[in-house]
Length: 199
Length: 85
Image 1: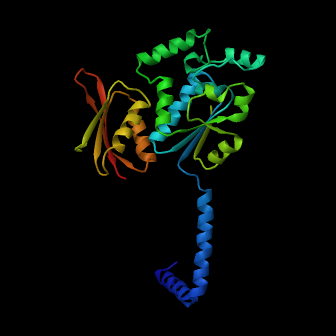
Image 2: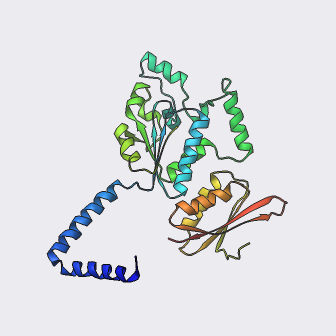
Image 3: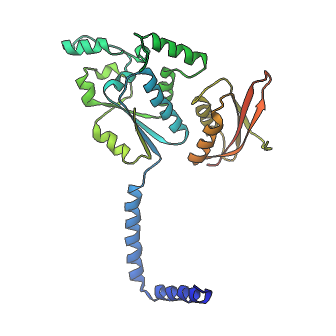
């Protein structure tokens, strides 16, 4: 296309726009604004959402390293703890007042991150202790330190009510300031997130 | 090596991923917009980590990166991060 035709085209559109009545223009702007607002609602935010399903030291560690890193990168982070992952939030074990299967479950699951095994080569806890030793040697932050740090930095932590109830874990066995939620709590956040992980 | 003047220096020698990044973020959030933080790290992964940080976060800019050898002969990774917002 030559320069002259482009020039006339530009002039043409300008004329068409100026010819439009102010009322039409205002209407068009209002319609556009509405569409932009609609679009903005669908654009992902600077958010990261993580489902922590596993309850092994190495996997939970990975989840918290990603969570803390994401906060450092200016992301809003939500973590959802379900099934074995709930053990990562436990601070103590309560046996009293639980049914027999709940008591058994309670005794067979870690009462805190301190008691967590590793997902490979655990050998009844030896592997876990070895990993902790090796991490300390290499100056890697402990899982307990990372969880505290994440909580301090404002990572949102939500415990899944249904799986907590099924596993017989009481809310007061978990850390303080843990929110309670369900699948929609996770999805509402995940749908607005740039990244969502299942660990 | 870039000649950047740092307003503050953060020493995270010996710390591993993700701590250098977290400490740097904590430090820079306490600084003023336009100021530069110099970070001394022994973590080799911090080179890429700081690049990723500057790329994703909207309030920092990586104004320089380099390697130095520390007093004990250890390799030091140096990052200059500027707070932009």
